[in-house]
Amino acid sequence: MIEAAQFVEAARERGFDWYAGVPCSYLTPFINYVLQDESLNYVSAANEGDAVALIAGVALGASGVHKARRGISMMQNSGLGNAVSPLTSLTWTFRLPQLLIVTWRGQPGVADEPQHALMGPVTPAMLDTMEIPWELFPTQADAIGPALDRATAHMDSTGRPYALVMQKGSVAAYKLSKKGLSGVRQRASNERAEVVSFPGERVSRHTALQRVVELTPKESTVVLASTGFCGRELYAIDDRENQVYLVGSMGCATPMALGLALSRPDLLVVALDGDGAALMRMGVFATLGAYGPSNLTHLLLDNGAHESTGAQATVSQGVEFARIASACGYALALDGDDLSVIDRLFEAKDIDGVRFARLSINTGTPTDLPRPSITPEDVRRRLQTHIGR
Image (cartoon, rainbow, N blue to C red):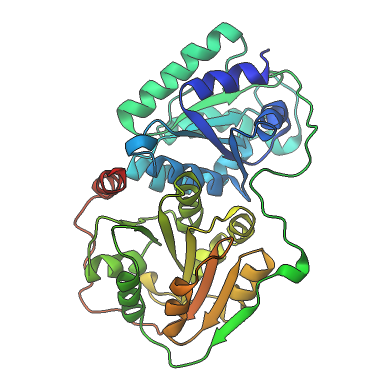
């Protein structure tokens, strides 16, 4: 058994200062220690996939003077199911490394609750199948440094995650004496942003994205586009080095943008979302409302359809996204059919917190829409070079 401080301080020496995750009783002393150290950064994620995507955003921002910055995602092994998509189509595809601490509930031979009866035995196989090297979390002080060195060596050489699987009783108890979470803005209910509406005539996604390009100079802005036609149309309009086109990882553009914006306050970060993607990970609205910094902008283009897969309808018609953003603590919440909603979103200055706008758009996509010819790895490498300057 080790003390939480022994691991965290050894990790800090190796550049790990960002943590995100969902608690597990095995992780309690570890999380309690990180929460109470103001020099470390901990984000309480709505689910494990969001945590992985957020730390991927931290890794994306690791360039230039920020190159040594690293992040850790923490989760119970049952949460691996929630994290499969970003682990296989985001971190693996773009080569965005992070350290995973996965607790081993239901470990064979260790009595546990019935919900862990299947996940426990298959946890090693799940990690192996996702091509994530793993080892047991160190339980002796002299084993911590070598384990972290193996992890960082793999991360640096491959650009991909490494996992430490934590068994019961690995870390000694550490009392939580602090209430609340660091970095969270506390807003009273009467401080919620008023939803401002912009009625008008709907435009196409293409027109909306053209306006976004006009308002996001590459010298000062990073744009992360959701998977599917959103990223493909942005690429077709203008393939710029400040743009990232997610492939797969549906719903992960927003938590990834949050990780980048939090770890790189020198950048203006824009998350381009879609209604289907937003519905898939609505828990991230609460995370963005709580932690979202002033350098983060969230634009949702809502056409009421999964257009990239045949235009099957979503349920967005009955969802008031701007009111949800306001209720979750966003500092600005706009809604409308008119293109001017985008102008208002980017004109907003001196606002303490993340800004949001939902723009209703028409369905329809340009014919012969190309797929990016640049690989995800090259997109990531090009962006890191750009922001490293």
